[in-house]
Image: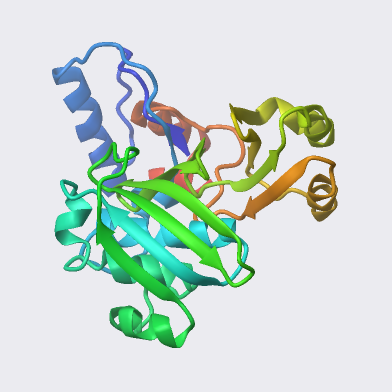
Length: 294
């Protein structure tokens, strides 16, 4: 895992090893040196398996097929029950509005909700299979305030237990995605961590913080006029005992828990640039491929 860094001018170290990975790295570094860009903030943490080699998917599009499938999988986990009703809204001026059927977004959303692998041979039949599996799914073109991305979607889901969730998602390319809001609360869920979210009534926040303990420092807290949402995102699962305790707290309105749909981003960063990856590989006697999979 590495972070795409702001440009920093450093002494270039030529690797003694050869191969495709080294050649690509050399091209990248020479390109940076020839096209100096201004200092910018770090963009995001990048995983070799999640963002570079992956995703393992079917076509035709990573952002219109793999991304929606992962959104569907994460939405199913957050719903916490088998979905029986699903409404998908795309803004009429969005990219998804134009191509959601031709590029398989509708089948991908449904397959994810029904926990059917993206590579299943039944993929093309998802629209026909959904009613047979108890899911009433509908896709509509309709404006919504949260539509801030060409691949924004608004999902309103109902589970067999009668509970409902509303979430705004973005498929941001390469199979990556972000769930940006859940039931009106701002969140950031990318499918790379174990997610624990607890909604409480206003005034009950101190109890939840005490249960989180040492992990409270890595939690995010969102206040709205209807309550408070605590969001804990971790590379390892929260103990079931903690989940039971959180659910039983006075003032708890709802508990959401979801595992990652991609490889969790755990541990410390090994390198933050192609140059640092080459230096580390040289130092430890590794190929760049071996270094990346550490």
